[in-house]
Image (cartoon, rainbow, N blue to C red; front, side, top):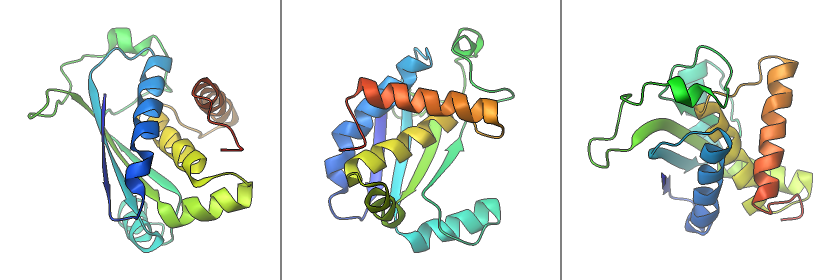
Amino acid sequence: MIVTIVSDAEGAEAFSELIQSVAAKALAFCGAKIDASVELLIVCDEEIAQINGRTRGIQRPTDVLSFPMIDWKAPADKDVWRFLDLSMEKDPETGKVLLGDIVISIDTARRQAQEFGHGLMRETAFLFLHGMLHLLGYDHQNSEQEDAMRAAQRQILDSLGVTRED
């Protein structure tokens, strides 16, 4: 699993090891035995507002956006990977399956970390995981999906020892 982090934000490289661990745990949690890649773009509120406006028609900042390469027809299911055609699009340079892109606003992450009383590392890990689960087919369009996504987030972060105090 490769996560490429693209950022001008000071200190973004400090997130690299944790982000790689979160990505690997998310893949394992979903039962995805694939060699995959994800690009993480860490931007400011102004940049994410522009992306949000262009892609979703919502002209304001948000904390995280995800852009899956897999067109999921149903909510994520651990068994789906048995049936998924792994001839899906691959990075020509690495041969890894392209799961998609995740964009995080570092400005919003900082505010939310302060608001929720935990560190920026924990908030960034949570936001990345949220985006990663979207790339893996999870959603929160209804309460059942939201409960499943929250349970997955909690289980994955707990398994990494990433707590609200971090």
